[in-house]
Image (tube, rainbow, N blue to C red; front, side, top):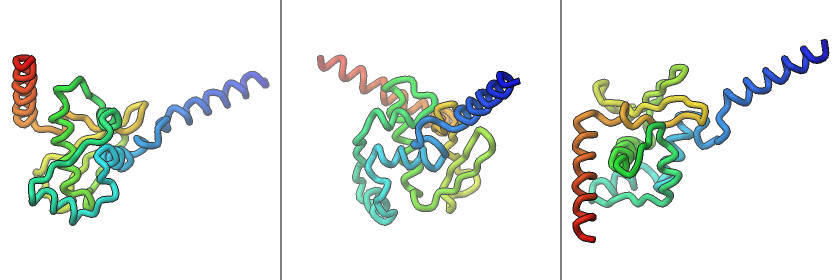
Length: 161
């Protein structure tokens, strides 16, 4: 009898641990987005400053590349850099007005002021927490153009060696 009770508690404890991601940086879609903003050190930057940077064409500097990569569910390599940057740009442009729609395992994020046909950033829930799905978040035509830019950059780098 005691063994059965202990087994039941062990199963419940395992389920409870399994349902919560180990890293609070990915515990919710908002936490993941905040983690992405932290990688660029813009989490506490006001929206007005973000807009100013966009207006003058100022680039955003990535401070923590490993943290950046960890925000994505389907990161496959350096050719995904452009996709990640594209997603960051979509999110940071509406940083203070993001609407998040969540069902059990998928979240869709877009600025509240965006049109309904504005493609959302998609996050998926995994054992490691909520992660951004690059291939669902970046339209196919944009993805193709960014991959081509990445290929050209690699070719130019190899030729310059």
